[in-house]
Length: 85
Image (cartoon, rainbow, N blue to C red; front, side, top):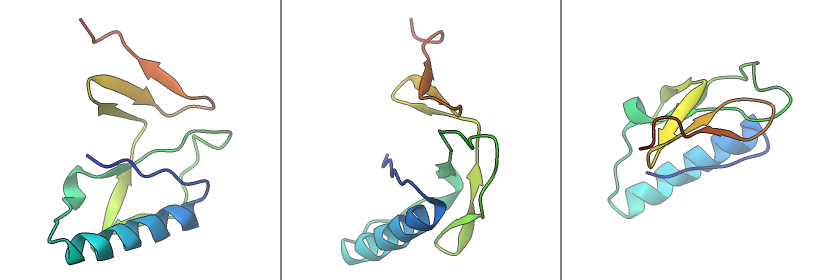
């Protein structure tokens, strides 16, 4: 799993494009169906322009699970550890 962080939607799209180019050079494949975008910050409940990976749109989500921890889209960085045993 790769996590890309950006302060803007434009910057995020550039990171996605660069990741695909470098992935092609290294013979790595990205699965656009298992990729998601999430916003954290003052505008967390708005949805910016669609992001694209391999010319396919990436879904905007309200939460994502990473190494057993659920990260939740909100004004501040919030994690949900209720599912951890």
